[in-house]
Image 1: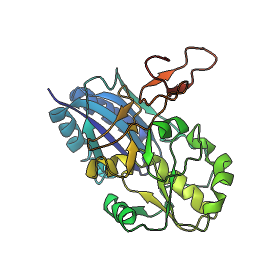
Image 2: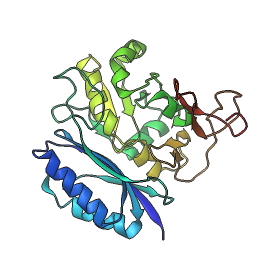
Image 3: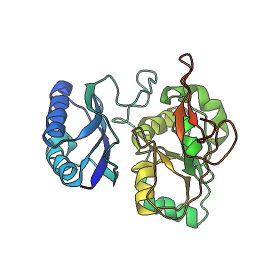
Image 4: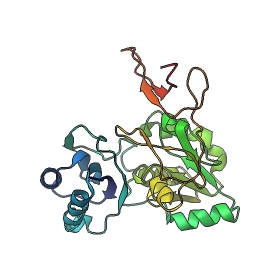
Length: 272
């Protein structure tokens, strides 16, 4: 049977986080889905895999809950092995930005969203803008939008320390991008609180753009936080990832075996 991966989030006030977590867990179990979800007072962030019919039934039922009624759900082809188990947790945040209290709450302030169609127009008309990739550095290595800036983040919470690298963009049109959009909700807002006046975010993230324009404007492949590690939506593309040791083109991620390191990096079959 064909499988499908669902990716979704929503920033919305959740009055009873334990109740929503239990609801998500029950629905996922009922429909034989594996994956993970984080629920917090500020919203939900999740990804699940299952047979197409089951994932669609799960999505329909989940979106009947009032706070999640208009939530957008992204879909991609699964391989049946993306997740080993089901994990649903209640946390303080749905993305670990850990920004100072009172700054960058997406429920209060976030950058305007542009659609994939609008970004396509920007590319085609050579709009004067700069893409800032808000993912971790290792994600950037296997794939990213052409011409994008990599702040070199190790974690989402590193953005305040990376601001000096972006200072020259304060007066420029900036588009923040990430995998599915959730990180850019708070990270674009943080830029706005730090004096960036012309900031936008890509609606539904790279995932949403690649669904509509496979093989266009995005170089390489998209990193995923599941067993697939990377994914694409077809179309012509080149491998831009390079082996950490020998610089051979590769999209194969490994973890350093040294218990004091565990660096997550690209390594060709020979070097690994």
